[in-house]
Length: 351
Image (cartoon, rainbow, N blue to C red; front, side):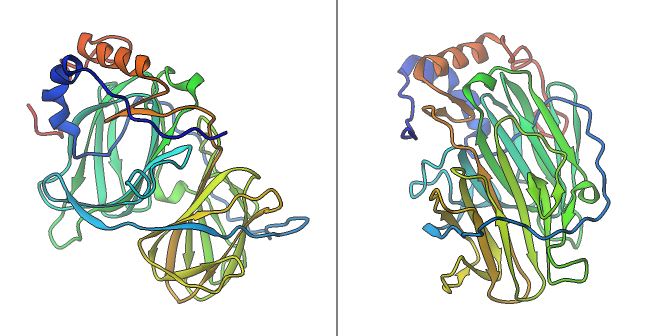
């Protein structure tokens, strides 16, 4: 059974000692972490039909508009998952479609207990963490971070004259409870290292960037802790694809350009909507049809977790006691937060 999302109620004493550091990240939903060698990726183009004994499509179960809202100083965020309209979609915690203007960003802040996936749609963003890793996520690139037991990091957009503000998607994925205290790690792929599937051939009307998971014979090298598939669907022309999804997994589509329909229902869903998909036992995947040329969306699916969510800002655990221990670890600088009070990033502007 999927358990309802719960928010930890903390004592005034605990809240008070966090008041100062909370200001650093209360407007941020960013993430990053420690280094793991980037896996070698085969970039050969593959395209094979998505086969199924019986292709039965999921349908739209719930539709949520992600309203653009100012957040922090200079940031605009469209949040669907994690908003009051969509609080519980295990294993997913937050989905933000962000646009960041000059001078805005997300300076030094901590994380524990979740993975974050930052995918740049336009522009680029620099990152730096307390484990000594730093770099830049370029347009079309992705960083998949597992915060694990704890990390400090900063993420700041890069602005160039004549270039649009950086835009992207950030997804928070809950970690299975057995992985919440692992060492932080990440996998980062440059744009040309993300494999691409061509359901109708390289000259066809649609391509799928396989950020994680498997699509039409193409498999991503990213290996998340816990099941999670992430696809960027790009329709140059009106066309339709069928994507297999493991039975019982939570799945959704976020549209950000053009419009599309799902399954046999002809209703066209316009940009900036999160479409939560059904999960009936006989459904083997989802049929997605572009209702107009130049339509883009992400299709994301994950294995649901049978565990309670206790979230306090950037800390995500399974019960109140674990949250209290996390706050104590942060305050005392231990168990993953040894550099919490001494490390300062170069890009965060807090020196």
